[in-house]
Structures are given as structure tokens and as C-alpha cells.
Amino acid sequence: MEPNQQSGPESIEMTSGAVSSFRGLVEIFYQPAAWFEKLRYNPKILVPYIVLAVLTAGMFLALGDLLVEMQMQSPQFQEQLERGSISPDIVSIMWISAVTLGSITMLLAPLVAALLVLFWGNVVLAGKASFKSLLSVMLYGEIIFAVGNLLVVPLALAKKSLAVGVNLGVLVAERGVQDVLYTALSKIDLFIIWEIVAIGIGLSIVYRLPRNRGYLLSVLSMGLLSVLAVAGAAIGSLF
Image 1 (tube, rainbow, N blue to C red):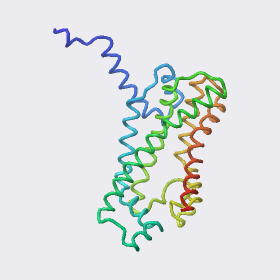
Image 2: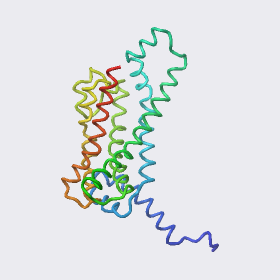
Image 3: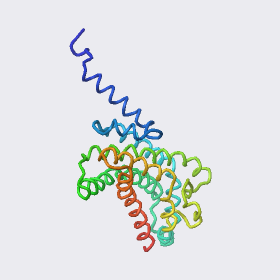
Image 4: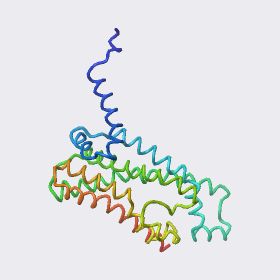
């Protein structure tokens, strides 16, 4: 057998690692504690990030037309339309912008959340955890939220509305998805809560903290991102 055709321990380990990474995408839903115990000393980044990117892009591609329609109904767009300052290609530009920026924003969320946890966990609580381990926890937790979003896509397409989901925002859906109250209530979502709980379990394992401390770190990171989203909606409503 040629030397370059031999299968050594390194290639076997890499194959095993890839299989394990994909297995974690399923285990995160029903046995997060067991999966995060495996991740503690061998964090996975590439596979969950690629899968998250595919799920996120798929959601935004499916909802692209609804996102454009929402923007076209905004007072700012209607004002520009009345002035006749709308380019003929504006719809295509808006569609590309909505899909691209939306996807990038969601893919940056785990990075920002990991940095927040690094501050709260390593600086404030004087714990010890690598950024790679924290990012791995955030990525697998975000998979829960991404799958939840995809499950809601058929309902959104059927109702031709973005104001759908398993959250309290549906109680004020008539106010529109850009409304501050809707944005705030939409954060009380089944899959967001599930994600926060799973991440809390992961952080408690990585830091070797009591479970309630892990939940606190999860809320301080993911919860703060939700607060920033509500604040952004509030600022946007002023213009």
C-alpha cells in the first residue's frame, strides 16, 4: 500500500471527531448535559458553525419576500415612494440586503454571546474557560433556536406574515413585527427559553459551577442580546 493511502491514528481521530460533532447536533436537544461533558475538553466549532450557517441562510432565503414586504410597509419607505426617489431595482436590493444582513447578524450572535460570557465568567466570577469552549457551547445552543425558526417558516409563509411563532409576541401581532412591544414579547419564546436552558447547562459544565450559576451566565449573555434587540427596535421607532 502506498504511504499516502495509509489510514493512521490521526485520520481516524479526525473522522471520529467529525462524526461526534454531527451527533452533538441531535444530542443537544435531548441530552445536553452529556454532550457538553464531551465538549469540555474537546470543543467543536467548525461543524456547528457550518450547520448553523446553512439553517440560518435557509430561513432567510425562504422568508426573503416577507422581509422585503415588511420594509416596504414602513413609513420611511412610503415617504420615499411618494417622493419618487425609489430605484426600479430597489426590491432586488432590499431582498439581497435582508437575506445577507439577517444571516450575518444571526451568525455573529454566538461570537458576541461567547465574549459576554468570557467577561462574566472569567472576569466577574473569576472562572477559567477558553473562548473556544464558550463559543462551542453557544453554537450548539444556537442550533436549537435556528431549528425552531425553521419550523415556524411554513406557518409564516402560509399566513404571509412574520408575526408568527411560539412566543408571546403573537398576542400583539396586529402591532407588527417592528413594534417595540412585539419585539419584547417575542423574546419570551419556547425555543429561546430552551436555548438559554441548554446553554446554561453547558456553561455550568465548562466552568464547573452549580447549575443555577450556569443559568445566570446564560441569561447575562443571551438575555443581554435580547435586551439589545428590544433597544434597537425602540430606537428604530423614533425615526
